[in-house]
Length: 202
Image (cartoon, rainbow, N blue to C red; front, top):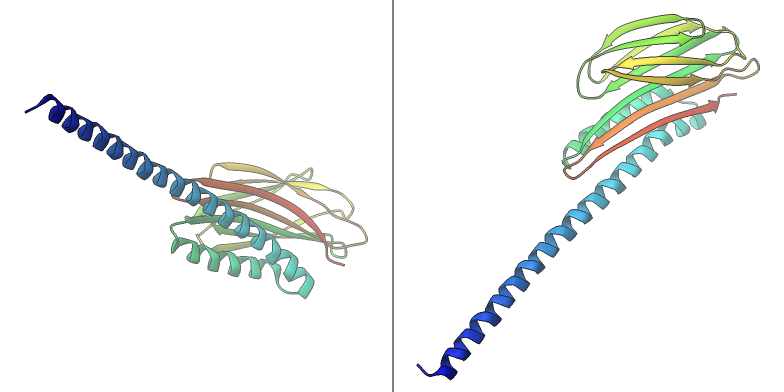
């Protein structure tokens, strides 16, 4: 075999090797871009879920509907749909109505975190405490005595988590206090949102 032929064969091997490496890099680039796309998609889905869950409270108030029931129904529906897209949605919700006429704070707690949980609610500064176990998909209704016009904090303990939920009351208006603890677990990322919002009912 002549030197020229050896050189050509070597050149073909080298060039072929470069193309193989190039193809490998391109494939790797596609995989990386796909992963980035999936992360962006999960981010977008999470942001939409959080927005719509919060909107379920707003729309229910605007339409004069049962807020807690609508949040429960929407969160339950969304959770089932999310599972079909390889996403795990966990929602813990506390909704409370501070009634200026009865001086009662009615509290509803929803558990959609995927398991039964023990929940302890302590209202400060009055130091009233209520405790129960809520099954997955479950709802718990309880109440505390309040003085309208005084602001409170509910220390909520659940699933080894402690959250301080601010409670606003007024002497001339009924107030709805909304608290969401939302987690979405995807294949590529985990997203969490805590939302604490107050609404004037009338």
